[in-house]
Image (cartoon, rainbow, N blue to C red; front, side, top):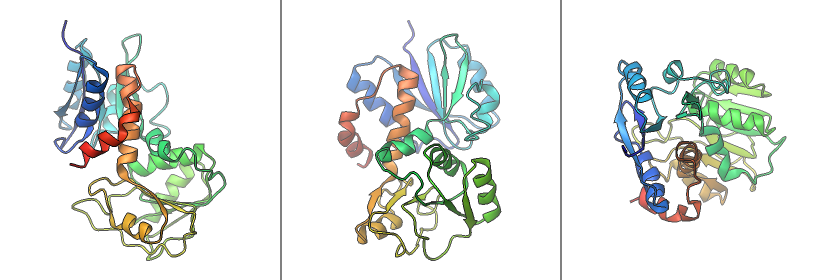
Length: 270
């Protein structure tokens, strides 16, 4: 019998940490399966799904940029991910053998702060791209608000607020963050190869939490600024591991060993 496998697809793809994460969990659980990279261009996406759907060993895949929206055209969407978050990051086979698209980013984002009581509390989200959509989806489901979106294009941010039914406003990225119980950087600012996110956090209360989904580098300027003010922080590896954990259970039908997260984080930061 062919060894079962799953993979992560994107263009480029070599930078993805998903094989390390899923491989760690597969080894820890003694599962005889493989998880790997697969470079897929936009032009090759239709052929990729046609080939994989015919391969009984294929458990599914994670989907990264730039295919998170385009992949929806090749899978079923019973959960209406297209109409909510607007993009998928995981494709799996259901019991009938159909390929289903879903998104684990929202759950992965919320997992590290699920004990945070912020219903009805103000939040600020920086960015209005695919990652911000997942964050806003989670915030809308948890009753957070009002929400301020800070983005280069306030019009795009305002459209997102409306699409998720959130009260708030959209503004250009200012020099200082507005008062917020939760501040989330869901943009590429601070990521390696991109401008840093230099923003004054003086208006945040001492009990505010700063969450940066960027994980390369792990210690971003935003997190350094927050820690200098003794604010609680969550780094990008928390969301990365959280969304991967949900995807792992979907793909391999078993919970990953989250009690070994410290060991996994150490490997990811080597």
